[in-house]
Structure formats: structure tokens, C-alpha cells
Length: 127
Image (cartoon, rainbow, N blue to C red):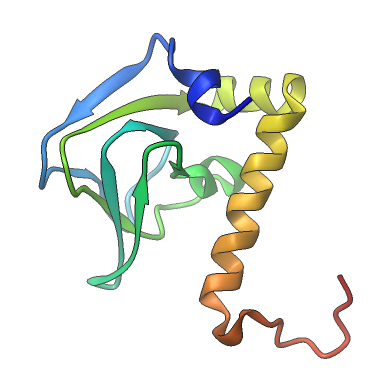
């Protein structure tokens, strides 16, 4: 099972044209997104930090910590996205262990990328 299978029949699907801003850094976030088709750029402090493709998620941090957006996201190509609000996010976390693991993997990968060399800075950390 993958995220595309979980969300391909979502009732909350939106489309963005190439170049459209999906959300901006510093704004309130109340949705997570699953990329059903297309590519999305993740921009932090006006620097491109990642390009996400079909099957990836983004915007999850705003739901987890109820915080402002930490990045700006822009449609690199025409995109079709499934919207996941707080209620659906919590339902998926409770009912679908695969979804929970996938969100944790995404967060772990992003932390690793942001840490030079992919290593933790804490010498006492043991995985």
C-alpha cells in the first residue's frame, strides 16, 4: 500500500497550474497535501531546498505542531493534490499504521537532509 492508493479517491482534490503558489512561508497552515500528480518546489528563505514528486506529502508540520508554515510551496508543474485537514489527518494516524509510519519517515528524511553529513549533532544520541 502507498499514499497514492490511500488518497487517489479523496473527495478533496485541488489542481494548481505551473508557477502557482500553494502556500507561503509564515502563513497559518490547516492542511497537509499528497501529490497525486506533478511536482512541487519547497522554498525556505527564498532558497529552493527540495522538489517533491507524485506520491510525496508536504505541509504535515503545520498539522502536527499547529504552527505557521516553515516554507513556501510552488507548483513546479501542473499538479493534482489531495487535501488532508486536521480531522482526516488524526483519523488516518489512528486508523492506518502505514500512514503514521510514512509521515514519520518523511520527517526523519527531512531532518537528515537538513543535518550536514546526515549525522546527528548530539554525540550521545543512539538510534
